[in-house]
Image (cartoon, rainbow, N blue to C red):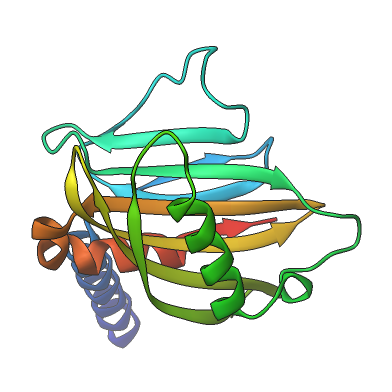
Length: 184
């Protein structure tokens, strides 16, 4: 009888814990086994067809079905043989280099401001978390949060972007999503 009670209690606890985590995050999983990365993304987001004209470095893009300018992307680029993320610089150095690329994009007049950078480790891989605010002439103020990692001779950048006015609403789920990004 005690074993039955204990088994029932464990089932109830596991259901409560799993339903709490699902309800809080509201995220679903995306896995790309061929490229070796995975992440969580918000419910209600759909993949964007990149077609053949998309830059080859952009691997995947998702956007919100309702707030169409809210999106995420994974960009993959080559790094020199044997280089690690730490070899490319500290989180702040990598963040400022990315900021320089954003501000020097010729096709748009972007102004971006670097907010924070931090390092985290997961499953023996180093990740840099970067946060920016930017002002785009056509879209106004936006908030971006990214995770950067190096694996198998490639640098992976997972970026989430939203209008600044929505940042407070989506911040928690974006933080969970960006920290969920992992590479093999």
